Length: 316
Image 1 (cartoon, rainbow, N blue to C red):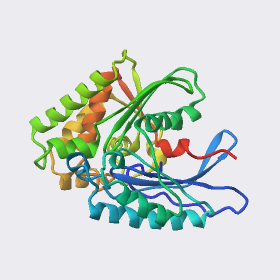
Image 2 (cartoon, helix red, strand yellow):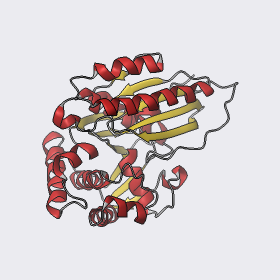
Image 3 (cartoon, one colour):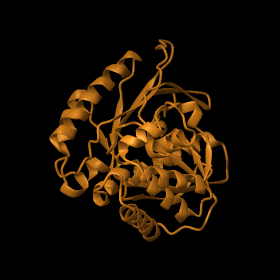
């Protein structure tokens, strides 16, 4: 996406001749808006932006969405509806793990539907994994093996396929916000806390989805795209400078280790492309990424600025 990491893309002027589509992905940590359309086999992006609202803050422990988190997210949805209208688009909105976990989900879904003028679709974990896979597979044009990892705030989806054909997928109950809240009590985190996150993530992957080794893992979403921006030492997030880049496992692990040694505030100074609203949970997210690469036997990470919202842009 443009900033899967949180920085808004520069919008193009609305084109009255085209039918722009708008998709809103309401995640545990971020709310994403994509305005795009298909032109033949290529997707044309008018706007792709992210705002961190942390809707799912504390939900894994309490089972409820906090009123202040709901309010922050509704305010962003109001803005996104107005933005989509500028392109003549009515947004399709979906939501994921943070809302799936909440016993009071209707306290969010009802007002969200009122703000947007249409119901918000609550995706299952299986749907989330399939859409994440399709967002990459529909553009590759390759018939070879494809493994797609989508690290979210509340869950992590790992999908395995051949070309555009999805073979298997699992939505794992681990995410950057979820594991940060579960294990981290210090800033910077204690080495034992980071080790606990890595062990929990690796154990979850191994128990939930045994896989043979494959050297390439394709990663999506804010943790992965932010990691790419940090590894490239970008002064600010740039979609074109991140999308389709590749990094070795050793680079990813070294970045995690360096980020874990400094406070959230120091991370923002060292890596200016890191959104301050993501700085506290980035170590947990990077640790999930490290564990996923270990589990998959991946020596290389391919970064795609994509996500399930891309698979929901309908073709004319």
